[in-house]
Amino acid sequence: MKHRTIDQIVSPMATSDGAGVKMLRAIGTPSLDHMDPFLLLDMFGSEKGTDYIAGFPDHPHRGFETVTYMLAGKMRHRDNAGNEGLLETGGAQWMTAGRGLIHSEMPEQTDGLMKGFQLWVNLPADQKMIAPRYQDLSPDDIPSKELDGIGTLKVIAGVAFGVTGPVSKIVTKPLFLDLDMKPHAEIEIPIPKGQTSFLYIFEGKMHLDGETIETNRLVTLEDGEVVSITAGSKGARFILLAADPIKEPIARYGPFVMNTQEEIYQAFDDFRAGKFG
Ligand code: CO
Image (cartoon, rainbow, N blue to C red):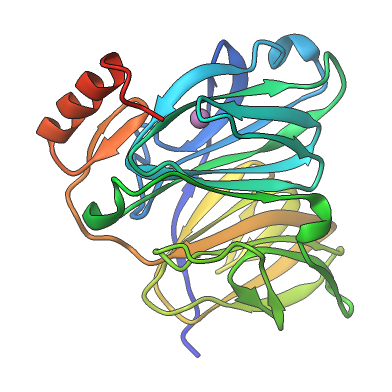
């Protein structure tokens, strides 16, 4: 088994998005523009309503997928095709934006902890203009398993330790898991060879490839078949992602991710002409 070693340890950047929601951005920054097929990773987390109350009012997307994983809090999702859903603690949404839609994600609380991740995953050229598709997952839809002496595993997409995540038919074949490890626990997690992979630790510390990784660090991994992790003295909780790289040119502007600049101009034209959704 070839062990995956560390490629980079990235400190996320404090930023704000939507109508002023405060967050940490770990992918989609000057130090890590993207890691094919992952285009963006944001972590939002605050107890203060003023940090998130403005939410993410109406905005378009085209050409990729947006994934939200809620660790705490409630957010209402609506789009211009009449779809609506409530994202709540432990739930997730995998939205394949495809040719485009206009949506909003607004807090359903005015105070108290709101915490979670937003991830953008690219689509290959032949899938960028497909019809939008949603996979809304309630907390009960996401399977959880106690790993003996290690901790609690949740699988959102892909398969790990005999648990299959509910997200289906995603072209990049993603693995998306959330692992909450006990103090000093050790684990080897299989990751399909050839897939791009990273993890983001959001509680505790871990030891990986001879390094100690602190809370709120993103670790990009070299290729291999398995990653070996030891939790720190207070445990460790992290998300781990892997997916097939797309290996196509990326033209990106704000909420549009296409292959060419021309397709970006087209996205703006279509958006202004009201052709989204
Ligand atoms: Co959005």
